[in-house]
Length: 229
Image (cartoon, rainbow, N blue to C red; front, side):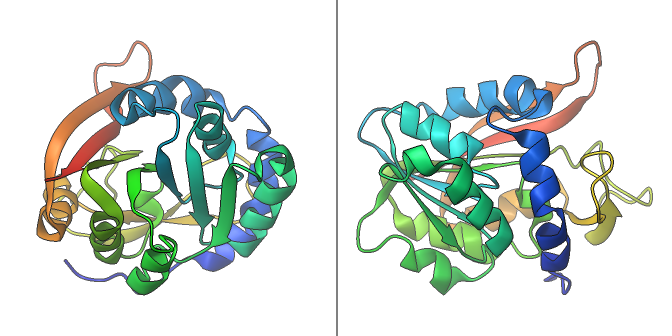
């Protein structure tokens, strides 16, 4: 798997306030009704569990995890987004610890464990925004306790690839929310590239779910559950 060179941080810093205003306290329809149900079903959070929320944005899902009784460590690549998350989720800071961290920096992600394993990890619609997923998968595998799970939702690469070429990894620029100030980077990878990165880290595939828009016959989202054996 070729490492992508452009990390796209500028776009997330530029879009942070726009995204926070748009997603608000409850997130949007796409996340609430399409992403969240399958992700929560696979994650199956129980009170007292320690959960790593990867690329947490403005902290909407972090707050939901806390409401379910989890102890949450949440991080995002964008310092501006984390500042907004702390402001918006000020009432949850006793249950959610927010950090700025690059998901492609294995050592930085490992440091978030602070000597205590995680029961579960989750990433909502962010894998396709990351320039390198292999260090993240390796770090998450190390951070999870035995039999821990890592659930991630992402664009389904079989149906969202650019340039008519599914198998070639590439960077594409796009607009996730209409009107956002700056186009963001999408890092296209085939399913085999994504899953092989997971398998090489040590995970086994434990669940797979595909989600279409209502009334459509092809999925827009894939939700993957990986398990540490």
